[in-house]
Length: 241
Ligand SMILES: [Zn+2]
Image (cartoon, rainbow, N blue to C red; front, side):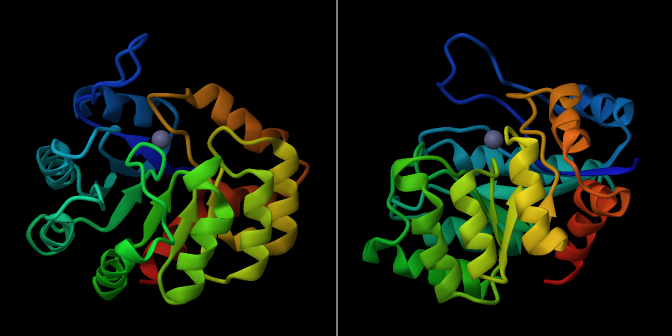
């Protein structure tokens, strides 16, 4: 089955993951996409503490220029920084990137705090869809849902589909979920709500294709729904901007 992947990290690693090195460049990534028949993928920088994101965004833009049919570039911005809005503008207008990846735990910010109103206002104005890491604390789907409700035209993708994200999917039509690290049961529940808003994601290089593809394959959903999750939904979402 043809695949599009909504969650890949690309470029050099930040000072994280002391037990592994997640640095991955296009010369490794493109053959990997070919091996698993991944036609197109959203790529964005590895986690960092903020000051390195601009140069990491540059590498994403360079990679997209080299492989425009295979890669869709999302930028990373630390919303706490004074130059955050400037960098948002730069990734869209100068680098031509398509969206934004945010990790409220790594970048240590509470999405619904009023300090970030201007940041999200600008993201919405620039029409940059956001892929949010979701988890506990600042990354909880309930907090991210507040942003989705405030900007109903902005596509919000909740990474690592978890149980709490299923409510968000039901409540807001601009919310999508992404499957890296999830369970087949959650994919079944999400597809019951809207099979057109579930996107396959691998979280390469932190997870591996055989396990992430197997999670979707194991879900008790129709072949048509699987095709939507693996491929069609991704293309529809990006064309819908
Ligand atoms: Zn990730």
